[in-house]
Amino acid sequence: MHKINMVSVQPLDPNDSTLLQEVVGLKARIKEEDFSIANIVMKPGVHAERHIHRSSKEVYIVTSGTASMIVDGRTYPISSGDVILILPEEQHEVYTSESEELEFLAFTLPAYTPDDFIKV
Image (cartoon, rainbow, N blue to C red; front, side, top):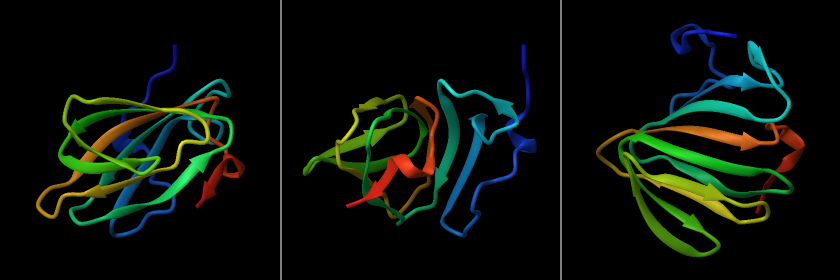
């Protein structure tokens, strides 16, 4: 068994608009190559740029907030409790609402690697 508290996990590439903490994965304190888990908090009015993943699948579990997600040109409202599956090569991006943060867990299978992330 492995256990950590997310409060102790340092953010990756910290910035003012998005907090990203990889808690399980290739570079995380809990090492795993088959999948990764990240806690992501996006501030109000933030846009996560459009991108694809060449070979990985992503599952987002929204834990709080609301946003709009665009997948392959279609816009979907997302909110707390939603579970989203994004398949390889699907173009996706997120726009948070102007009034609240969006927090979600992102599961990536296999584990996230930077070379699988491609801006489009």
